[in-house]
Length: 279
Image (cartoon, rainbow, N blue to C red; front, side, top):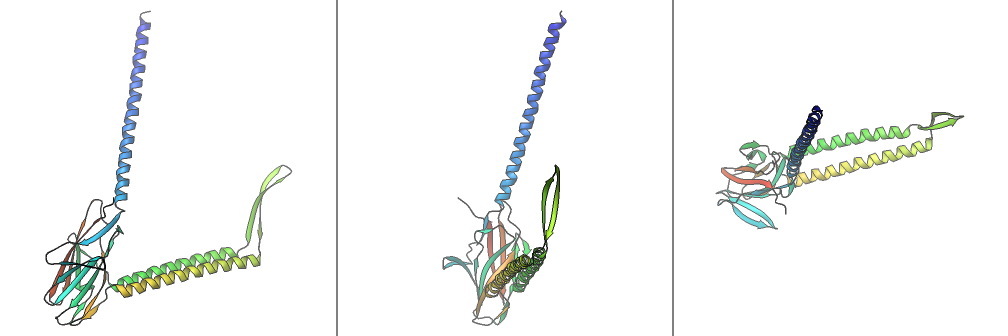
């Protein structure tokens, strides 16, 4: 009889301990879930932060004059023989691996020299960065256009072939309690011809759209991007520079240094790329 209270006591203690263990397990799982949620939220926020808009601005310097033209800031470097005006056109742009600036050079009294991307050097955080030539940009656009045209033509040919094939019909039947499936093939020449013509017309429209868009892009490259030019005395010329840069990390900036060699003059501009502040 004395054993019964002891058994009940130990049973009660065992139940309490089991409940405690279950509670601890639930607590541990809750902590792990919270940690996982925190990690996922941090990663998600970091990825979202890396997708925001970025801008590039020229750093103010006593050697650089700041002016405004048509609402855009222009930064001017004057040397004994030449003048360079520079403006960033990367404003509120997606976080990509390229930035662009607009440069105009004037040869006031120097002997002739050639202005091209080879006379301009760029550094990003102290590391040399590539400046794309007009020919490289043009070749990249032509290559992209050709790939799109080939892909569209292959897809159109496949769709046209599929449209020209006989149509297969499938279904189920019940014959005297016996169930099964059936299939049948029919060919309608008139319907096939119409379907093929529609696919071909759609493919041709896509090809024309790709070609016209590419020609427009090539025209913009031709009109706006810097190309090698002999700068005679009294001449002024410029264009857009596209510079390769790393993607901007979250909560960071990039220091960019541009060095332009014009004859015996050397012009330098410091730029900063950073995240746009959103309200």
